[in-house]
Image 1 (cartoon, rainbow, N blue to C red):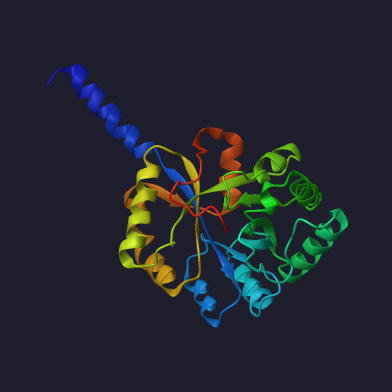
Image 2 (cartoon, rainbow, N blue to C red):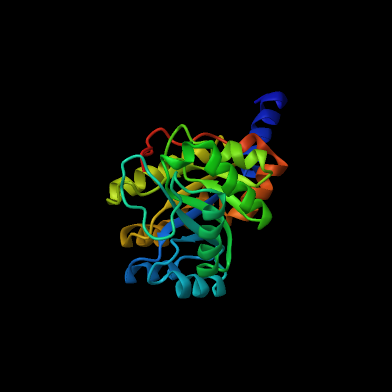
Amino acid sequence: MTLTRLALLLLFFVSSHLHAAQVAIIIDDVGYRQSDKQVLQLPPQITLSFLPFTPLSHELSKQAYQQGHEIMLHLPMQALNGKAMGIGGINSDMNQRAINNILDKAIKDIPYAKGVNNHMGSFVTQLEQPMKWLMAELKQRNMFFVDSITTRYTKARSEADKAHVPNLRRTVFLDNDTSPQGLEHQFQHIIKLSKTHDHFIVIAHPHLETIEYLKENLGRLKHYNVQVIPVTQLLAARYKNTEGNITASSSAPLTK
């Protein structure tokens, strides 16, 4: 083996072990079911996003915060399919004062929330004005925003950028299919992305199948040099180096 080839192999070995992808995993839709309490079994590196005004939201978010989880508000927003968004949601008929009041009440229910991501919202996130009002209020409260990307026409992130609200966008939904095969398929997708991208967001839900899968498989990510971190740490990475940002997976549903 020539010295040049040996040097190249050594360089490849070192660089492959130095590269560490960082991923934030958000479990949202938390708060409705008694089974949602199982999220407390997940490690504190997992970020939890709570639906406001649900039976468990206030107390469970407090418990999760005390266990070290980063907490988010999963804010309901109007969808294209007309599906009921639940209490405390934003719709297209609201003015700025109404949106501010909704956000104020929701944050009082989830007081430890550092940021917001949208629940549904395929209609209202396409509308410039409500997104502008929402981002202005988040800016006042020093909160970040994660766009769940329920429509490819979302204006949430562009309005967040205009308002100087720290923001990220979802890349992968882990559990559209909660079968073992479906979860493993998306897990492999995460591993594949980690080889070419430094930072990205994964969203999952408090299905018992998802929680059990994560408990059994999160440790595998260390083998691929993938680090699970809270969203705020991923935001710090994004604003230090934006090269890791990628668009949402084309396999994700876009009409929620």
